[in-house]
Amino acid sequence: MRNLKTLLAALLIAPALALASEGVHLDRAPDVSGDKAALQNGAKLFVNYCLSCHGASALRYNRLLDLGLTEQQVIDNLMFTTDRIGDQMTVALRPADAKKWFGVVPPDLSIIARARASADGSGADWLYTYLRSFYRDETRPTGWNNVIFPNVGMPHILFELQGEQVLKTEKSQHDGKEVEEHKLALTPNTGSLSAEEYDKQVADLVGFLVWMSDPEAGFRKQLGVGVLLFLAVLFVFAYALKKEFWKDVH
Image (cartoon, rainbow, N blue to C red; front, side):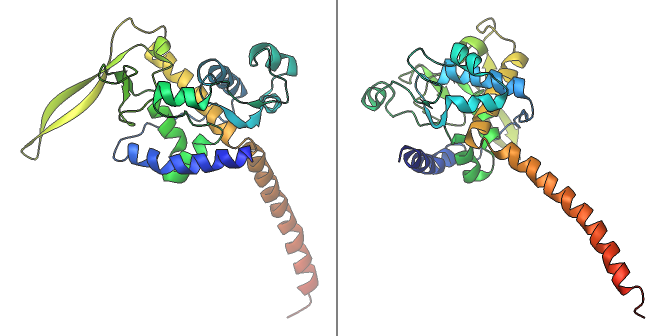
């Protein structure tokens, strides 16, 4: 029942997210699906920065063993003391409190990448761009806003890593008309990481969110390759058998 609620929530927020990013350029997210070290780092970032508000109830902690982690590593580094290895990745934040503090209940992130992909086929790209597009906006309750999700209720949880960005408006001429362009500018010396380092951390986090949305995707791809190779070998034998059967037919 809980997983069904998660799926329904994702389907409900997908159209809203599609409208929020309509007409906005999305940066290509690096593909880290085959890099277990990157996915492990993404899991660490998710637990440290996201799991306090956003649950992932369709995933259990023991599924993280598929990323090459041992059970003890998961227990020591990715779980709270009250959790058990077979528990779902849920949060203690009560929906009523979340509604009061943020204006909306933070969505479960179990299948957020698939929800975005079903909206316009750019789940990873949207998440990658979104997490790099926050800027300071004192008119918002949280003090933050986002270029591709205007008036978002979520604060910039990674600002200590990235630093603060400001939105600058520049005017330019296009076809004889004055056009306003909005660009983000990073305030110097406000983050602990360089722009390249921050982008790498976001890529790892997005990679984990994509993996979490469909943990079996990698296995299905490997199985598909194996099936195609089997059919290729079978074709050779089938063709040889066909020639043997028809060699005396003229």
